[in-house]
Every structure is written in C-alpha cells, then in structure tokens.
Image (tube, rainbow, N blue to C red; front, side, top):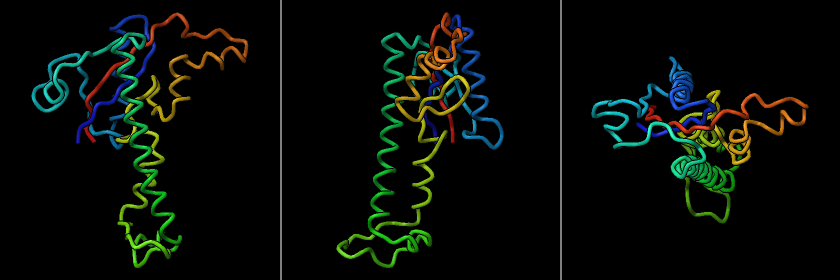
Length: 188
C-alpha cells in the first residue's frame, strides 16, 4: 500500500530542506522500520510511486505558504480521522464485551442489550493503530522523524519548541531558519 506523508523541517533554503527531509524519510524506511521505501517528488519516479502514482506535486514548500498550510492541514486532518475511526471501533468493542472476551479476541456474545456482534479478530490491531507513533495512521513527521500525533505537537513543531527555549533562558537555534513541508510517497 502507498500513502503520502510529509516532513516538516527547518532549513535556510529549499535544497537544504530537501536534504533534511530525505534524512527523515530514510530513517523511517531503514530495514525493519516503519515503511518499506519512499519516493520524494523532486525527480521523476516512473509509474509506480511518487508523481507516477499521485501526479505532479510540489516537492518542497514553505509551511507559511498557502500550499504549505494545505499540506499541513490535510496531514493533520487525515491523522485525526484515522484516530477517530480506530477510537470508535475500540470503544464499541470495550462497551460490548468483557475483558476476557477481548483478551481472547473471540466473540461468543455481547454484553446484554447489544444484539450486534463485533469482529474482535482485529481488536488488538485497532488498539495498536490508535496508539501508533509512526506508520500508516500518521501523515506528518517532524525533522527528527517523530510522528506528529496531536495539534499541540504540531504547534510545538511549527514554533520549534520556542517556549521551551524561552523558559530555559536560551536562544532558539532555529529562529532564523525557514519552516518547510516536504512530501513523499511511502510504501508500507
């Protein structure tokens, strides 16, 4: 399966941003890691990934630009939608079945008052998806390769933890760098 993820990186210029994003994507695709491989949109990629699969896409945009805000907005929207979907499925199972049934992931009967039987074979998988830090339920990553899982984390990434530096009385080393958003097609 393929999906588009985006890295938010700090850099002086576009070339530097592409290099930093490449480092993020390589970290997410090393052997045994989150994704199998990636293809950025900075060069032609044939028919199976990148622009060959998704069509032309900007390869690197400023986070403050209209397109950058759209990239970030859709990444958070998709991450939030995945979270809500898995949360609802986990809540429904928890509300319908006692712990021993969920533990065995086998459905014999729901708690009284519920005629609907849920497919429990994926219960733990849905719990895993709900708690993912990276992977196919996370669409945005920071410059260190950590999945951005909340709006608060996104705010911290976009301000490069300015409050943290301020509270410690230190100068933010990122304050003079530009914030970039770089997409990549990944396979999982």
